[in-house]
Image 1 (cartoon, rainbow, N blue to C red):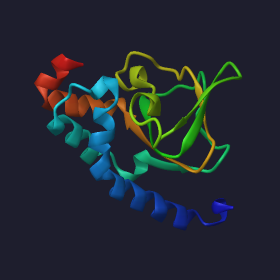
Image 2: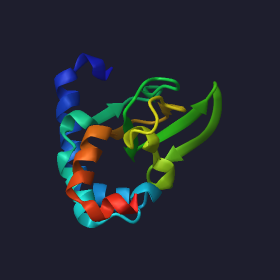
Image 3: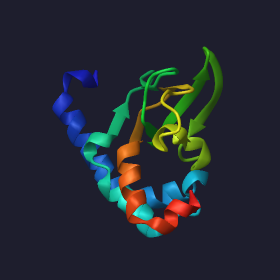
Image 4: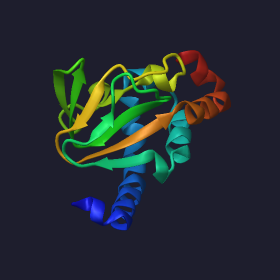
Length: 151
């Protein structure tokens, strides 16, 4: 239904992305990968993520597909998503009930250590996600040497 209104979808995605910026650092600090990072490093990541890195998915939309090439981490800002491996449902994750570790996938892709997605992630409800690409992560990491040692 929303495909008929692509301009409105982009406006909504931009709005959610901007409003969620203030929560992104808190959200990321709950993810084990970033748990020991400085607020300055997390702010750097937050400010470098553009509206192009924010996406909205309708129910049954595929956030990422197993064995697909990717260089970014998927961070679920809002919604409920199902995690599949080899066609088997592993779990459902709700961003409000399970903030942090269970709401991100592909850390190894973002770190540049893996080139493919290990799971398929599908939207159960409307989902808003951010993709954190390796290039942006690496740029921020070079700016904060102390955080480089923590990761």
